[in-house]
Image (spheres, rainbow, N blue to C red):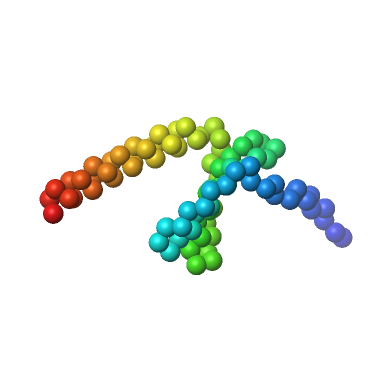
Length: 85
């Protein structure tokens, strides 16, 4: 007896993409779209090992605001480290 396995459509190409190489890591940021809407696929590649997260477009603004707060906080830490050093 064979079981019916629904086939997924092949992944669509990115609408837009960015690639960042930082130290020994490569990051791919791909804006994509599927039947549920647009999303950002963020992939980290370290020596061939990949980890990926998907961020729905509805979360972009909140994610960016949180990221900006962390960047600002880290900048304050760096400035205080420089002043103490």
